[in-house]
Amino acid sequence: MHLAGGIVVRPVWSRELPAGPSSVRVYRDAVGHWWASFVVATVAGELPVTGRVIGIDWGVKETATTTSDAHDLPHPQHGKTAAQKLAKYQRMMARRRPPKGQAGSKGYREAKRQTVKLHRKVAAQRTDTAR
Image (cartoon, rainbow, N blue to C red; front, side, top):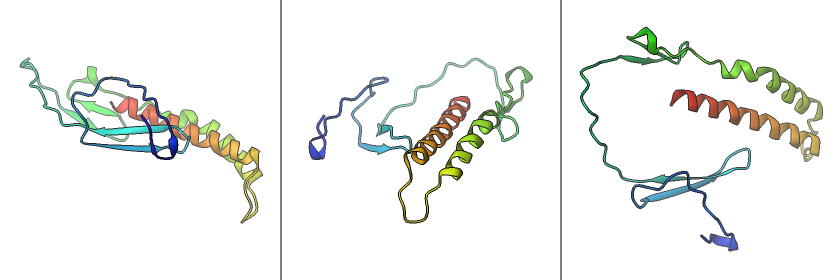
């Protein structure tokens, strides 16, 4: 696929689209990764009737509390796990912060990239846990 400016993009598909997309949003995150978001019309299928019922409450203290104790999901604390590394990278940024109006040094940009990368990792872990 060719984009404006002579850029050639070779998509890597995680799965086939069920239909042609009605719109596509291409964006770049803070880490520098490119993403494409497709809007596709789909039809939701019916699930088989099992006769069982469960109530789920998505929360903050616990990821999910259900009416069945066997299916409760405790909070994984991804942010607390990454806090020590995050503090380290933020201290590195603070020590290397450039004066106002000047570009950051290579060390500052690297520390900033590591901070953003860690934030992205925690966000991905949280999304994965939620799904």
